[in-house]
Length: 407
Image (tube, rainbow, N blue to C red; front, side):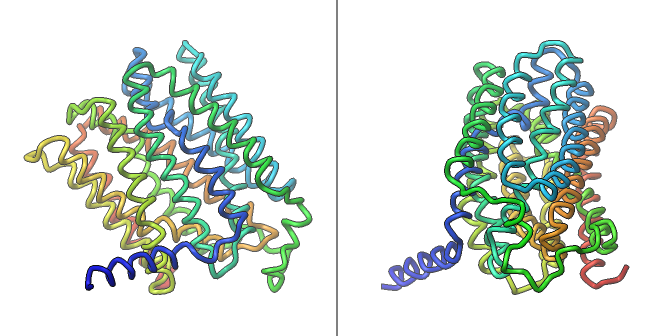
């Protein structure tokens, strides 16, 4: 009988965690699930470049160029979303991004790879500010974190599937990654067009749920507390992006794990998030401030990097434990980051806020991929993990300071 009540309580917990979301949020999540099921080029980009004969530094530069393009795309995506609306910004970013993924897979020279990577990332990443604006539009203040989390759940379900499939495809032929990523992007664009009702710019700017806020608000760059937060996001994402650049490389070169099992480890991250993040968000929402949760999550993430230096453990065990811990840190911190900056915006400037937020991640991608590989090459992976873990702790201290409003 006790087991029955425990099972019943668990079922109710999951049911409550998913209630309150409208149909459009679920449809948007489906679009993201399809899109992210093909997300396999970026986590394998470093290994791909090395596989076709380029050095670690050259591979890191390609990922850095992706970050530069995404920085430009994030800025443009935010501006375009506020100017023309999030609906068509999302559609064209997905459609054109899919075509560019396929094109990138056909490039053979280093210059052409770098050139195509820049334009791919610029187009592809312009999707993110528009998508964040769409989520905020479809949600309410009460269920905003939950709405961002259901989309993150879809992303991570797709990431779990795509990571495992990507590892399998990479073990056969790396070129297959680009075809699959391209077609899933295009499929997601068509699904968005046919499943989600069109939202005009006028409807976007005059949504009734938040009319208490003035439409013509101050620009995002005038919000000093937000800019301080953005600086911390650069540091957080600098560390987090190691998951897609130096960590897979370390798994391959340092721990001698092959591509298939690297894909499995990447998929574990997505599967755990898909299973537990919505419940964690439901339990934590309102229990503590967003910034305090970010502080705790970032400290947990620091531990995941320090663990990579426990060389007395078997390689796959170290990789699995580190992946598990960074996933826990991600679930505690990241769902509340979107809610924090959205809470400081209005319908009139939300694209700007989303654009700056995405630009912070893009900047970190440039810095993280560049300096991560440079440090690994010059000082070794062990020193890299100590440095990255230290940056995580510095970032956590910054979140704590911001939470106490000491600026």
